[in-house]
Picture: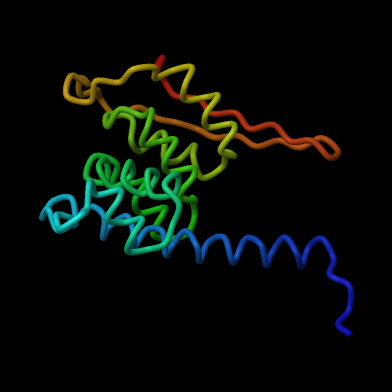
Amino acid sequence: MDERLDWVTASEKAGLLSGQVAQLHAQLVCLAARVIEDDAWVGVGIRSVEHFLEVQTGLDRHTVSKLVAVARRAGELPELMGLLGEGTVTLDQAAVVAQHAPAAYSADVAEFAQYATVTQLRRGLAGYFHDTDRTLTPERPSQEASVQISASGERFRLTFMTGDMV
């Protein structure tokens, strides 16, 4: 029998596997974007791009809806797509960003996403970006952003700050 798995080894292995899954999800997002662009999903009995991906991948509708949501915003959120492709953010994190973040804040929100849990992203982004009309998002000058992580015992605090109000 193998030795007991310790916390550090388990954490490293979970991070590695999660990154690999994220990289595969990034490939599926790119495929979905192409399928949408080329209307390659249209076929007998197929009702939508989501239905096409459910049938072709065997994934559940919630996962497919995340893939499609990110795919529809892929061109607007290049930094996020880069991080997903690197395995630095997960599909779940990317879907929250795609749902809430205006394109003008793509770089800032992508930076934040790689340090935040899905729950932190939902809480943080929903408070700033309620109903984003992406076509009316004004361009803004580039602002500095910072992410600060501090730890105290077994707790940590994640702080995200930009030079302006988002």
